[in-house]
Image (cartoon, rainbow, N blue to C red; front, side):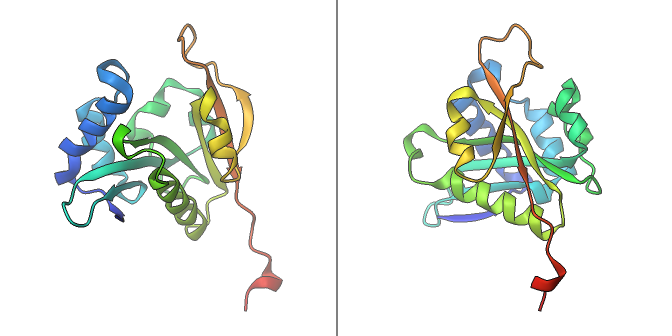
Length: 172
């Protein structure tokens, strides 16, 4: 397996993963995914089998003001602003037959490392209630219920990971 940045040619495979994980009604539109690939390519990674080239897991996000999390626009690719202090995780997904092997965790670690390398203040996102412990294992804190999508049957939680500022004494 290898991690690489997603490219436009991956769009069909990415759409298949989204549909397998979230169903037709829960997945992002193909048009939005295509725009994400165009507007924020440095925030879109895939895990692929080296032998076959099959994409089995993905993670995408964007840089945006933390306040974007509280608006419907959070789900739209045009919110991306590379100069913003925060990286927002929009989706992390793995094909059902490949879960439990650490692939999403490797992608999440890659996103954290990328944010740190680019001097971001932290990462934020939302997840289903049952996934909170998974994200906490990576250092995220649960900020409680996220009720932006009122009336939805899924219980979402807001997550944040504050990245420590480098101490000048630690710089060689």
